[in-house]
Length: 89
Image (spheres, rainbow, N blue to C red):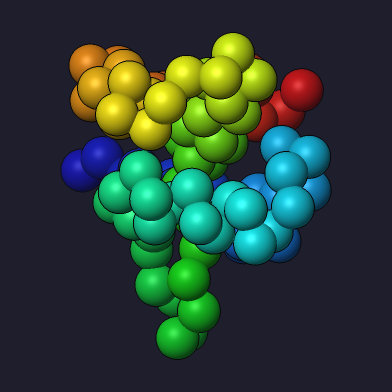
């Protein structure tokens, strides 16, 4: 039997880790269809740690002034994996 440990972060935590204001993170999750990273636990929404990499990727794209369609296309062609090593850094 394999047990998968899933680490989750709140919207506030995601905001603090990425340095992006909470309302912008929330908008990006909605605008870029990232709600697949959401998990409900005790009637609250949390995010898988991969969301950190996704938000940072969007942040980098926004800094480069990429449009929403280009960012969506790039997100669709990428895989985001958050490793255990990144978690403990």
